[in-house]
Length: 280
Image (cartoon, rainbow, N blue to C red; front, top):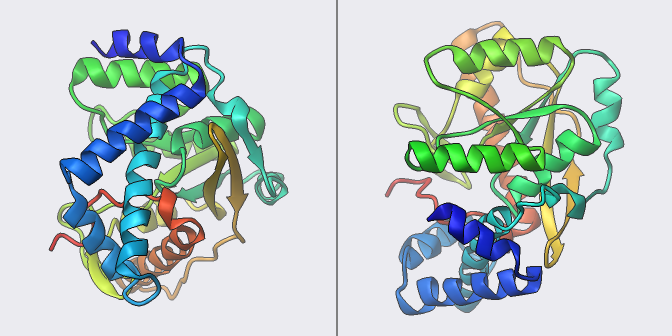
C-alpha cells in the first residue's frame, strides 16, 4: 500500500503534493481536530504571551501541513533527488569544524523537512549519519529506510542494545558526522525545564558525548518555498564540564534544551508540535 502511494505521489508535480498535504491538514486540524488541543497546549507552554490565540491556531495548522508535506514529499521522492532542493546559509561552520579531523555531532530537531536536510548534509557537505527511531511495523520501516537511503539519508541502525553507540564511535573515529535529534521525550528520563516547564528530556546525548567526544554544532532549517529549504548552522556548542558526571549530564542536557528552544523560535510554524513533549 505504501509503495502504491509513493508511486502515485511521485508522478504528481510538487505543488500538487503540497496541495494534498494542505487538504489533509485542513481535514485533520480544522475538521477532525486530531491532536489540535495538544498542539495548542504545546504552543501555550512555549509562547504564553508572544502570540494571540488566533495566531497560535494558525501556527498549529501550518505545522500540521508542514509535517504532512515533509512525509508526502519523502514518499514522492523515488527519483532520489530530495536533497537537490536544499541550500546552505553557512556551511563553512560545519566544514571548518570537520577540518580538525575530530568528526562532529549535529544537534538537530524536527523542523521543516528534516528528511531533505539530513540527506543534503550527507550529499553536499560530509558523510552524515542520523540516529532515528523505527517507523511503524517491519515492512513500513524497511520501506522508509530504503527510500531514505535512496535519497542520501544515512540512518544509524539500532537492532540490538549497543549497536548505535558502537556505530557512533566508528563514525566519529572516521571524522564523519553524527546527527542527534534532541527535541523529543524519552521514557525514564528526568524532567528538565524546556520553555520554562519541566519536560521529559533525552539525556543520552550528554552521556554519549562524554564517552565519544567531538565538536557539536546546532542545525535547523526553513522551508522557503514549496520543496525548497535553507539550512543554518549555529555556533559550536561547548558543553559544561565540571568533573562531576551526574551534574554535568544534567547541566549539558539543560544547555541542549535551551539550544533547541532557540532553534524552534526561528520558525515555529514549521516545527513538529504534534509531539506530547510535556506529557500533561
